[in-house]
Image 1 (cartoon, rainbow, N blue to C red):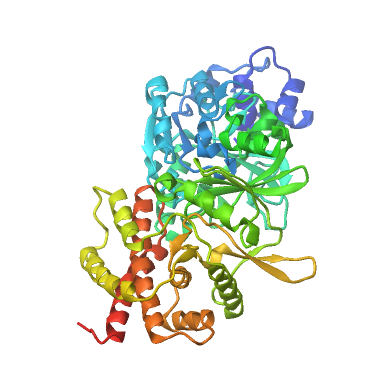
Image 2: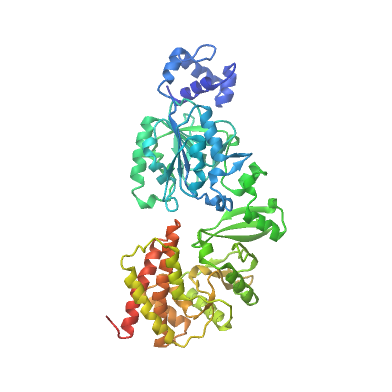
Length: 588
């Protein structure tokens, strides 16, 4: 039988009550003529009776098609769910008094599916209660921060037999699960979109579509029989071997040699909702407890607006320290900053607040509407059209160094200092119990400490130093006259220090070569840098490299990996120690 015949057969099996061919036409969205033909085929095969009930032969036909279990994918950050995902993982969001993942589990139980595996990662501890409550099995994706659900599904590839694959963020109006399935399918909706890569054909075949073509919205719920499961498992294991696939969804495994492993199954778009954003949750259930979020409540209080006035919430790129999101309120755009993992140990928010108060009158930073000196929440006006500095464009770099020199010339004073060597020790202490990943760390640290004497011998006039003056924190903001204004943002670490530290920080974040480091120094000093100061900046590059290397190691313990950046910082510590000793004639 073809899949259309199988689908009609299952509709007959699962219908409770007196069924007619006209009703069957409504249930399947097939024409009455098509239904007449399918019913004829099923009757000729002795699978159904004239009264549209299942025969004994039909029951035998189902015997090998019982659904074995389900895999629920719940490992990801759910970044688009900001700010809710700062407090709870997406699968545990409540809709109409019921958590999303619990609703899915209950719907599975309703059709006697109890073998359920949940792949978790982000906030995995919050799912632990499901083990006792529903007797599910949890599988942990420890690499959820770097790898998408392609890797999550590969972790349970051995379980891909007669089972459903279920995203945790789906809310179905009616139970989408059945006790029996007769073919492998991937669920799409009847809504068409440019963002989909598949289209369902009349014969239920799934075809790939181009980027400029309409496709059916991909819902993600999937049924996988034994044969398809074996093929899919092999595809998954092969795909995850290539790091280039780390950020892909598992759906890249749908097609093999341009042919889809699964048939398509279509559902009315009104019957299912993928809860991907705060606004989608609010539209579905304006009384959800999860809408009572600290960040949202802060916005409503400080801007004196209603929650419904907060629209167009969009996650911004996840930063090294914070998570931020863009939103629109009463025709104006703002950015809300929410501190990231471990930030409470890394940043003194009272100090940051003091800095913003001191520099406010100079208009060199972002426009702060609200800042909380205790939890680090910050609301700033969105700088429309702003772009970051390109560290490889030395025309832009010169403009940034001019702005940095302007800051340093103000000689602003605050009551706190950023001691580079104490901060290195501090970051080491944060990762107590975890030795450095670098085997020669103690030797490198000892060498860097030797540079302290040279630095302290220099005549240094300390003033407010940004500390994190990296290219990403210099914004070029278009003005009404066509010119651009430079703003320096993210003053979390700003403190009293030698202003020349900012030059070193810009260089190492840009991962500059020695030639470009010297070029940067010459730009800042307008070609008038003494050898003594240049060597001092080399010292700062080594010291700051070790500083941020330790910072990266601590963040790595929290599940945040900065890849090449962290390796480069450690290498700067080693390389520039050698450069300094060479410049001073102290080669060992």
